Image 1: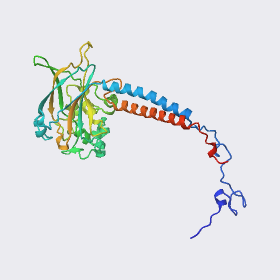
Image 2 (image 1 turned 135 degrees about the vertical axis):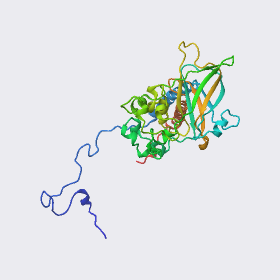
Image 3 (image 1 turned 120 degrees about the vertical axis):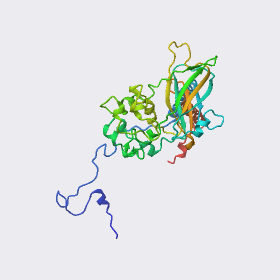
Length: 370
């Protein structure tokens, strides 16, 4: 079927009658003759010349390179030590625990790893646990939680969200906390001791408070209200499948660190973006006199209660000791990125300066036809 096209139709000029203004009167679709609708507003268009581009490249290079060097040096001054205690190698002290322990084991397995600090750690020292090949960023894993339940909602406590399946109920009782994230809570226990010259041990005080974000601790995670006795609050619920004790026994000695507001639990519930990650476990506070290092050089022993099996998914476990600076933990990437961008801009500036010096004086007016 063919159709005819009339340019006047597009401009709003229709032949014939039929408008509200009477026959023979056509309504135009032409935009109003204003600066905005006719695109005559004043505008500024930069003209890229050698006088503007070359200084920009040199300025960016001269600013970025010193900043990158400062960030890189600061990152390298941060002291960090990693101890892998997975127990894959037969010579590892944790080999027997790694081979024999599973989620169904009832008795904990204990192993000890001895290591040496070649240089003292000063200031506050942060102890992390690290996992590898653990995909906390999986879509179904990330969604497997009930934020209303974790915020202390009593209805969600006894009727968790369906997103928690298959860790929503167990033995016809609601699980608290529900979901795959809570069910896979990291539960290794790490203790650190300094070995004295006479072979005796001095335990290192590990602070477990202040490791979670303030907003998580005081806003996102709350225990159900109505009774200070958490045993009564959670009496109609059951513990997650892989847990060895219920949520109200995570830290019974400290009511401000028990239940849903337990900081170890809160830290774990903030999922990581990459399969290799670390999470803050404890803080070793600096000495009050500021004269002795927090961790002097010498021999230390890490005592591990091995409760978290990782060989089933080819994972690795490690303990990290690290100091911090004004820019946070050890991360040389930012400094390298600044140095790289600054160097590229500076080199481009030199190359363009050479090209402009050699070819910029030639006149191109002869190439343009009259």
